[in-house]
Image 1 (tube, rainbow, N blue to C red):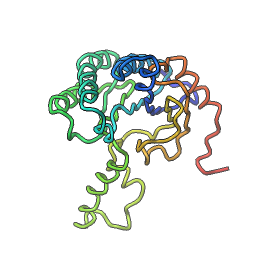
Image 2 (cartoon, one colour):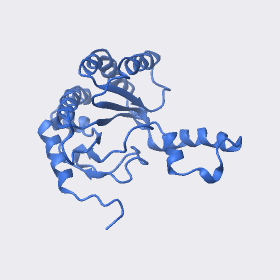
Image 3 (cartoon, rainbow, N blue to C red):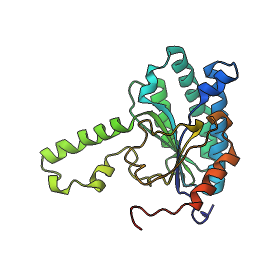
Image 4 (tube, one colour):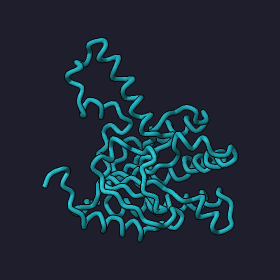
Length: 236
């Protein structure tokens, strides 16, 4: 689909509020996560139809390992199901799946499926869906610097040449455009260690709805808000 004028090329979403949504309804937190997966399907389809080229979803942070063991197990089960079923639909719709974040300590069977799905969809030319999984922005920068420092030490990269472009080449998101629009649901207004480098010039939108209530119409509303703003990138 040709991209409509001023549609954000890249939208990043912090899918917040599953647990609170469930608690307020007298349900288990895992029921909130289950409902949240339905919104993922809806928003992926809508983003593609609206002409968005990259959609990044914050699926699981490095800090989420501190949650109760049972909740983590259920989240991994939902992820496993997504990789088995939704990935097929992504491929059939010419979409590419990328996973950003550290492999460890993700279960080995999840790591294996991630590699398989990424390889299967790597040549697709439609929407790129990025799942930030076991992801933390500070950890991403640490990993980048650990790769750059030995190259500088060995003289393969001159210290004076290390700039934003060099650092960007070693980030998980290398090759993707930076997000134009960040959406965080549930009304919370913080980044929570998400894409700190990449969000430097993004427009930010904080709807009060919890993620399980965030629909296609809400995504369209966010895009309309984005289109009404003037992005100056530090200029006048």
